[in-house]
Image (cartoon, rainbow, N blue to C red; front, side):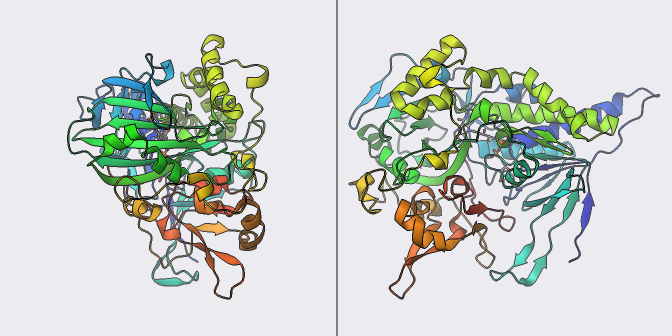
Length: 566
Ligand SMILES: Cc1cc2nc3c(=O)[nH]c(=O)nc-3n(C[C@H](O)[C@H](O)[C@H](O)COP(=O)(O)OP(=O)(O)OC[C@H]3O[C@@H](n4cnc5c(N)ncnc54)[C@H](O)[C@@H]3O)c2cc1C
């Protein structure tokens, strides 16, 4: 097959806040250098920078909370407010509630990590689109609908660029009339900013052993809706975080409610993807959350307008892989820079993109793209505020392995100890999250009847919605005549071992009804049906499958959710 090859200096994979900030910063550094270099110096000349994005547009696949700590954006664009960054509102008040089944108890003090004074409520989808425009103004080439499908390596395993996905392949794997082979984008440096559980990042980390010496990454999933309220019952700028209902005390979880402009309520629920109960369904947890009297009252008479779900890399300091190798750097969530105690990663994503840009700028001047040169990235990240911030909360997530209450005590202690933990609270999180899931029988269940956990939860179509209705509100689109991008490596396991041992948890942990066990018609075992066109690209299946036989790869470019305003 003949493939086109395009030559760039730097290719950024993924148009998230990390990479867009990196591309913008690099374009400016190069411009400034070319303009100010003295006569004896050698200008860098035209440096071709590309950003590729699998979504139909910049921001289409971006889902976050989000309360943004503006620290890094201020460094990138000091007058971001004056320049019209799309901010919903400065945070005006913080509420912290503990929810029992029926009551909402407001804490008289807001725990320090949940204090958001000086921060902004944003739609990260809009903010990212705005950063994309800034990049284009600075001369960066942005290619939406270009999924990075494979990394290109030389014979010494140095990364030489990225191959984008083919277009126009039918579901049997044959080329259609509109077939276009993917393009080889060759680059001196490739920057992976794919967000949590990046599909290329996963390949790279495995191939080069970049996670040697780190703990396995652990994840959470956030499930979210936007609601239009009929009145001003929830003020713009109010931030509420909740703990308690509906999570059981052994499951990591919590909710958020943010007041956006125009009476839009932003509400969501996070569930740790290291849960033990095999019947947990993060979408159902969120639906139950909305049945709490306090939340149900807030939503009464309102209309759900958008839905989405995405994973969060929560492992922090101990779970970070090596972030550089020959010809490649990792930035943002795929490098594990999110602070899970504060549920904040936008600021560190932006900062890491900027630091990557500075390191690449030096590498371009020296014409050296080796790991030895790019290693400088690790050093500057360590010297920046990213690592000290992560170090202070390095044992936060591990503290919850003994349940909510001990987790909270550990969180409190860490303020005093600067992040140190001992004994019971010490990290021994050597297991990836899916290994925490117990088998049905071990957990005391008989069969996989969901009622055993979500007894009484009904989808009334007013406050609570089933997955299919919610997915409709994620505006997901994939051409159905293409091979499924969810590769299940052995579907026999689904009908046999997984059915018996775990009751096919993919049907529950997927928030988009992608996985379904259906009768195969001959009265025999049920078989797996993959409704891949529902996929919201959250990556939960790749993370949480107990046998690790689901491999999420990029579908044809442009497919997936459209997270407008999320
Ligand atoms: C539910 C939820 C709530 C959150 N709340 C907050 C909050 O309140 N405050 C806060 O600061 N942070 C919050 N975060 C975290 C924050 O959103 C992330 O830290 C931040 O978005 C990370 O930026 P990134 O650029 O690394 O990756 P992302 O924002 O994930 O962007 C990655 C981009 O890369 C694209 N991509 C991925 N793979 C490929 C590929 N192979 N080819 C082409 N394109 C690809 C994706 O489509 C996406 O557009 C939250 C996250 C979630 C999920």
